[in-house]
Length: 139
Image 1 (cartoon, rainbow, N blue to C red):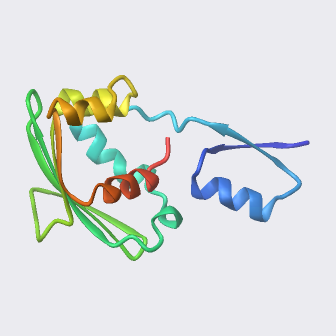
Image 2 (cartoon, rainbow, N blue to C red; image 1 turned 90 degrees about the vertical axis):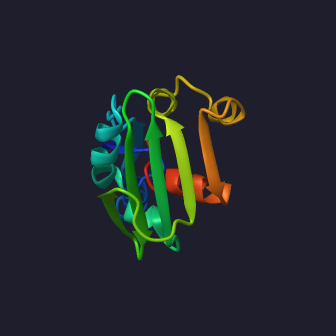
């Protein structure tokens, strides 16, 4: 049986299951681990999964503090992604995070709940929007 390598919960995995049912989908990691906030923001368009964002229309304001200060607005609307520097428009969810903590969270070295309890990551808005955001960028 021929194997097709896909990122778990990605648009590619759904496509293989639908289009090539006779092939075996083998799950792999996307291989992208940002080591800086700028790499995280720059990598968003590369890892965005439009089909996973179906029905999501939200504006996210990210504020990073600490070693690497930065602000960005991420808009997901009509299965499209836009990332711009600075805060633009009204946010549905605002997140302020220590840049080092955020990078450790992305690398799965930091627990999100502990970071929230220690106030190293703070969110304003519906927490389900953060979960929906993560679904659009499977690892």
